[in-house]
Length: 101
Image (cartoon, rainbow, N blue to C red):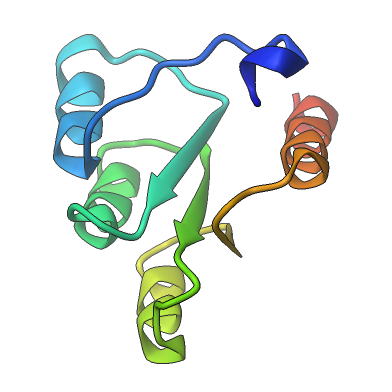
């Protein structure tokens, strides 16, 4: 969906890889979409301590309990949505980033 909006993307397998990519390359990102699975909470906590000020948006499943969503938000998310993300949500996030640039 992001690519259909003309956004350049980089997808990684899990939060650990996302942390490593930033640590090694120092690549700047405008938006980080973080899944609640595969250590997403730990990565969300780690990235700001590495100097990341990028908007981090969490994506949870319909089956995630509210306590889990709360823990994910407390880890440092800017926003959190249930999967699957819609085109409207993607466009809204792109607009927020564009307005803050």
